[in-house]
Amino acid sequence: MLVSPGGCRRSSGNRQDEGFLQIKGSDTIVNAGQMVSEEFMKVNPYIFVGVTGGGSGVGIASLINGTCDIAISSREMKAKEYELARKHGVEPNEITVAYDGVAVVVNMNNPVEHLTLDQLRRIFTGEVKNWKELGGKDMSIVTLSREVSSGTHMYFKEEVIRQGKKDSVAEFSSETLLLTSSQAIVEEVANNESAIGYLGMGYVSDRTKTVKLGKKEGDYFPADISHVLNKKYPLSRPLYFYINGRPQGIIKQFIDFTLSPRGQQQFAETGFVPLEAGFVQKNK
Amino acid sequence: MFRKINERIIETAIRVSGFAVIAFVILIFLFLLKDSLSLFRVYPLKAFLTSTQWLPISEPPTFGIIPLLMGSILVMVGAIVICVPIGVATALFIAEVAPGYLKMILKSLVEILASIPSVVLGFIGIVWLGPFLKTTLHLNTGMCGLTGAILLAFMALPTIISISEDAIIGIPRSYKEAAYGLGATRWQTMWRIVLPAASSGIIAAVMLGIGRVIGETMVVMMVTGNAPIIPHSILQPLRTLTATIAGEMGETVGGSDHYYALFAVGLVLFVITFMLNFVADISLRKSRK
Image 1: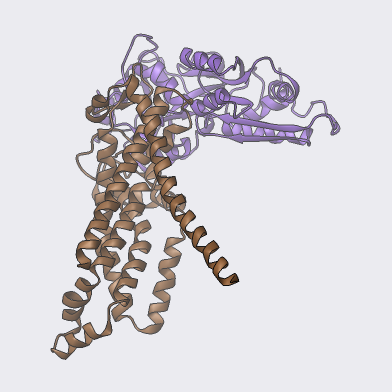
Image 2 (image 1 turned 30 degrees about the vertical axis):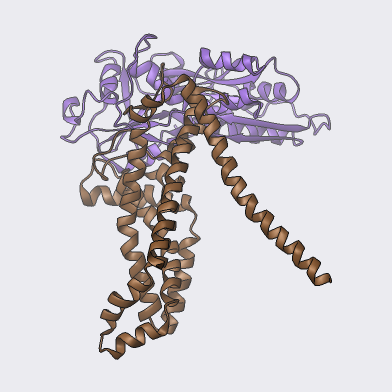
């Protein structure tokens, strides 16, 4: 099914549709969110949408603190956060808006092409310290991570470092560098031959090399739209909007727009995976 | 008559603003103290001060301030070692050696240096200085304490240069004339007479520079790698107190343990700057006697 963008209802500047929407959270999807909101403002010129990043944790915290209308998040809310939200009189409502694969990137000159999840875990916990052990050059591994406010950090910790086990207490190696943005990870990986980092698919560029991942040896899949949709790529995850209670008014309008073909097209164009197949990715 | 009333009004206004400043400092301190103490109700003070791990979002969390404190101190010492000699030498050159036109050019350049936003310096650190240090020193990564220390030294230089220069210019002419009269060379005069005579002002300049360095956030957050390890050398990635607060404050919910822990970090930072100023004040008094 191929859905063409732009087939959306145009609400001829209805004066009732006005207001201000504050969207905050995940740095992974902040660009996609920005694109969606720009398209949305073309259709609804009297609704202003502000999108800021900071990390999924920042978005969720500000939803709980009542300083944003929609929290964008690349991870699920934790039980503790639900508890805190109720204490502050907020009833979080989760809406899946797109999918993403967490891509693992290395320097262009790094000969390593693929890794298993277990190898990845050993790299980031510091058990493996040299690329030689993984079939690469003889140089020590520099592991790059996002800050603790990042949803991708949390996701990576739960799925890779702790292997999805709830009772695991494994941590990132304390030598892991915690960078403040996905773009900083791109810069460091592009400049540093021994670096390895992870980021949302939207930040994959031709300045870094994305390694294929597999749950077991010999069974590797690239981080692309089709392998995320059929869940073959092992680090596939949904991206969420969180709002307080049932969607109403302009919040509902914005969410409906996000889930419409025109909104979904923006996710495809920024490198993410829309909820349904059939969208054309621009840069891929 | 009017003059008297006017004078009284101005006097009161000045007195009120003076007391207001003191009140602000005390209020900030109390505010930090209140929220920090909330942490120590659920998390032991001893663990906060002695634990070597900072794992704020784990279950259960560990809030050990040692790695952050060491990171801040290491970057600070590195920056001082770089910026104090350069800063004082530049100030001496501008005040004593440089001819008039060069003096004007140098002074305005120093002012431009002061006006570079810290985030721009951080950017330069990420895309240029970090990779440069990595290749020249054969490091694993350019995101290390030294990158941060060099950039911070740049940020502290304008403060150190302008205040030291003021102090040097303020030395009575007769001191130098006496030195020259005794047959001292220009260098001997600068080294033995001018510098010691201006030392109190120079110490104040250095202390203000250090204050700038330890409180700076954006640059260190962008270039030092933020790994919460206890650094053994300045060539390793490290995480400072300020970067921790800035990096984590956004995701904490008001009233959580993590939120209070960041306030406790802020309190430690406040105590450090307070002590620095205190020491500076004592040394200023001593050198004046």
